[in-house]
Length: 203
Image (cartoon, rainbow, N blue to C red; front, top):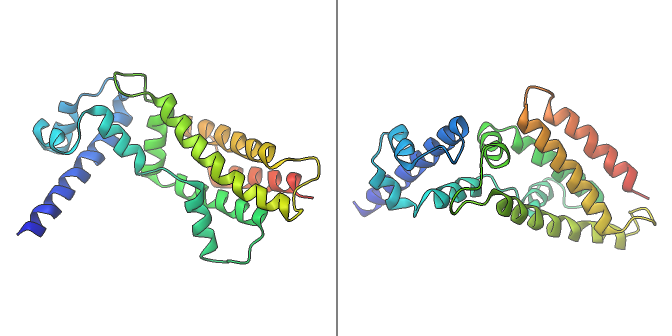
């Protein structure tokens, strides 16, 4: 019985997250109330407060579902080939990120974070974006350092600059595509930009 109760609680939490994703995407975060999210999920506001402290807590849980730590993308690539060079591993990891971004839930939630989330009480979207960006920078930098140590990077290119170049290119790509996903195919254009960037960086 306890196991069933735990499963039901998990299902309720998932239903609230799905409802929040849909309502936040349609209305924006600031203009959405917990009452609207509960109603959309077919639940009570009490159910929301049972699982989340406030709207900020709910929003952070939603964003956590689609975080893409660069190391997790590297691990995904390593499962298929453990003998990759650092630059090839970065290239393939970035391609893997594009595949994830095409998933509807990733697309909607990241679009909410970048384009539909205003400063509101305990929600600071810029702080959240900064935290995610810094995490990605540190993990990608570690691999570019390996590439430098193996003399794979151009002599005049430091690992720090290489990381900033790649991160800035990807950030601009994601931002533009999430604003208008019908404008271009993210995997096609992104793949070309990633491959070209790596070629320009290698020795």
